[in-house]
Amino acid sequence: MRVASIDIGTNTILLLVAETDGQVISTLLDEQSIARLGKGVDSQRRIDDPAYERCKTALLSFKNTALQYAVEHIAVTGTSAIRDAANRDAFIARIFDETGLKIELLSGVEEAHWSYLGTLAGVPVRDTEIAVLDIGGGSTELTLGKGSEITQRTSLDIGCVRLTEKYLHDSPPTQDQLAACTERVEATLAEFPKLPPGSTLIGVAGTLTTLAAIDLGLESYN
Image (tube, rainbow, N blue to C red):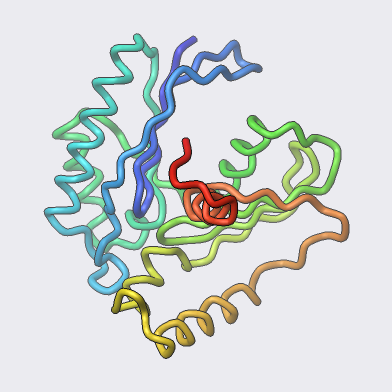
């Protein structure tokens, strides 16, 4: 069975086309588009028209690509930016009318749940305590578990787009801006549960892969 998933994030929209027999998932295509849907949502509490158009363009492109792979189903999920927007219902309805794609809006803990299970599908860690950290554009999730059993899910409204818009107004940011941003991050992280001793921490999403690329001195990576 061939299926596709489209994940609408605050900064990036992801497309995955895969083949599955119900147990094993084989990736056929993995693409992304930086639509920056959440631009201004933290301050305005709404998705504006330019952001809507960027999102719609990406969704139509991804839908066309998925259909070229003869998928049987396209699952579309929305996360932090759509959750926070006062006009989210109108946004979801308009996307459906103009693309034919129905968005399933995930709660923060549902987002944490799927981040964890998605990580397990790609990382061979099964019988140890696991913590999955997903830093997004609008929210950050930390999920604890052992194997496929999830023991705790936490989602907090802190992400790279949200923090940049609220605190980092210059490029490069000033020391005062960095200090205010750091204070917010540290205060928010205090709300996360402590990791079990000996647990394996796995980081996912673009912020962490970018940090890893910087640490490794990579000029480009895939």
